[in-house]
Image (cartoon, rainbow, N blue to C red; front, side, top):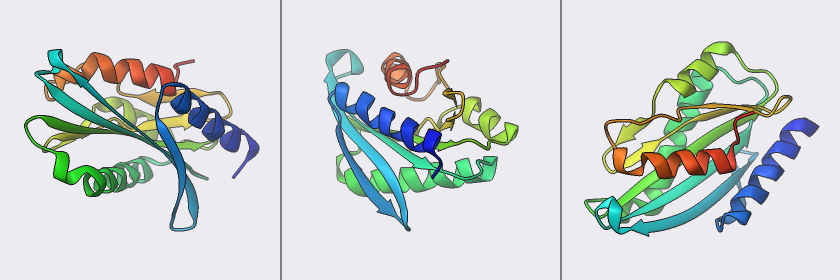
Length: 163
């Protein structure tokens, strides 16, 4: 892991902790992965609790395929952790972030395209260029999960500030 990548992941952990997230590092197949978690409940979300995970991992080369694979792995991970809480009054969201210094343009484009949705779960993939601090992700409104859109944008801006 290069120094810019290590520093960005570490700073992300600090931003997560500063926002009240539980933060830990896990081993995913020999790769240290930062995992942050928080849950929020709001009446304006139709009395729904949102379980939000942020998962950041270093990557030597970030391709669109790598982002898609990591996003699916992150969704599988959070659904396994919080799967019993999904349903009408509980939602699960994840920010799967790959952090590196070599990013193929289609990877950033794929991350910005839209959020990925499964039943009562959504992912907003993030591609971070640690050498510039640039974070590419979908920061818009989506038809599915629209009730959480503003909250997710605020959290993305806090954890992965646009530069």
